[in-house]
Image 1 (cartoon, rainbow, N blue to C red):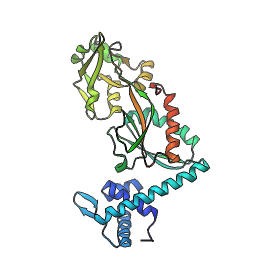
Image 2 (cartoon, rainbow, N blue to C red):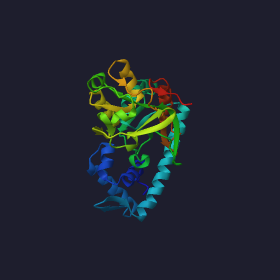
Image 3 (spheres, helix red, strand yellow):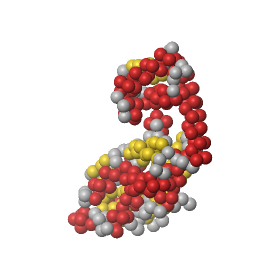
Image 4 (tube, rainbow, N blue to C red):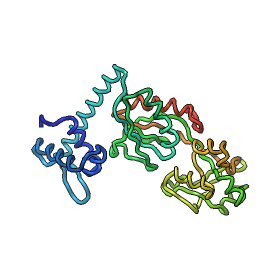
Length: 305
């Protein structure tokens, strides 16, 4: 067992968390056979079968669960130690795995990467772009950029700003179909909705001081917030999406706000979320500090109150 390295322990922990050798191989960009050989060597060094293999995937055995606890404890201690030395030398370096929605990734994070690299040349970012809510531990995520208030006590969250949503369509669509004058008119229009997050299809308004919600029935829909915006830009209908995407396009004459005087923007806080065991690492803190400054100056993002 003394022949095992910290990297072996990291690998075993990821096998246990992801449940397949292929997922770990993709994460490390190595052949599956290499992961399999390493796992066999780890089991041989421990003198026990650590992983149960079945058609449903890989799960730790009783001995594997015990080994996993020690792996997490030791690798966590190593991360903290690296963080201590990095903080003293004021150098942030290494890979940071970041999860974000399509819109946040395309319109906020990617434009910030050049200045992030200039400030911290030793940092590398692995960007996972999905609209679904990721499991940070399972997916190996260092930082998740999320809207809404985090409720778990296993994470630390820092608010970066606030995002609002409004209704938009192209000038061409409105010229061809007319502009709705009341939310009730929306049922006569082609609407673009989100098939992955149904709450986004509850379009809020304030009429004579009272909240009103229209449940949008889509003629076009997608599970990607980025694609719903693209559908609207093609002139296919009216969609509700983030102002950070739409407002620059409004100024270019490509989009027009719809029912602007009645729409309830319902601003949502946007957070950088990290696991409690990792939020002090210099590479993670450096990214979050940079994005807090970047988001504060980004068009369409309101500063935290």
